[in-house]
Image (cartoon, rainbow, N blue to C red; front, side, top):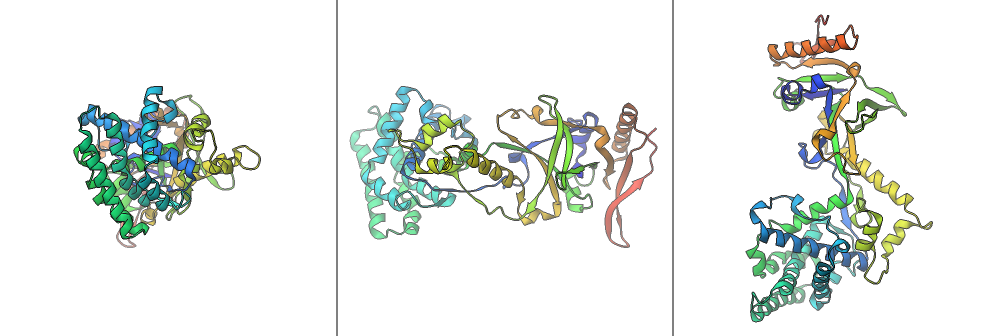
Length: 441
């Protein structure tokens, strides 16, 4: 198993060779924006959707307040959206405010008709693009109710209700003209422009970020170390080894569990040494669909039920009853949840197939690996089989690497170590490693 590295990682700040480390990177920092992608849809009943809209109101209201308080400190990222806020965890005073805004929105006749139609009485399967359009339609109304609740006579009642009348008229015109989903959703821009409040506070596409951030409620953070089954891909050397100036580490892997590959690593938190599985990447779209509402897996069950699966009268959603199953427990649901997490790690688009990647993944269930230092794992030097120099690896850096290996061989009573250099054969047009005969004693 091979791992391409640039010289800064190997010899520079990180000293990966000297310290025998493998860093597990956050998927958000990798070069594929679709890392650990899951195809979500939203399908529920009225209880779940009502709780969803109340959660949306809570996040939107909080975000507006943060922008008002410190607009320069809010960055253009989905991480700014406070999706981990839960209604049941707020103060009594703030819960009353959010509940009033929610009930005013929920009891708005136009909103009732619109949402019931868009969601086919709350049972329709909604994908993220349509959810985005739906939120764009209702956002001006929710903003209006937020302003009304917190106005404190800053805006005259007459002006407020003129805005509401414009919103209602625009939406009534949309519904009269054609009640098809496509036509309604095309009008999102026109409806949002009616809200002067949205133009006043630029929330940098709150709705898109909100949908992206919801994933944090469904999936734990995933960290990955990447390897390849081969070392003879010119493009990979150009990208991952800094234009062929870096090196490639060749690891011994061992096989167990019906042919699966493993590498032994030491966890920096508890110094536990164990075998980490190398999962082969499958190069095709991950077409498995996951219902977001039945995969909110990072919240404790008490908080989950109070905020998503029960209404204010403690009636439970039929989807929660389905999750519990006939036996009244969640064991089967938990298994499906973790299967979905494992599944998303192993898929990439076919554009990446030349990488022939295998990866070690770490699912951070309890948020123990947020700090980068906690993801610097150690390997056994005896599991490092060889080092392959790139075609442009400088002589000075080669000698530094050879001297480090000599020292480590002596410390580990190892009397052999293989070095290679990548070369291009212009007779048979092969780019492959050629052995270097270097005395390590």
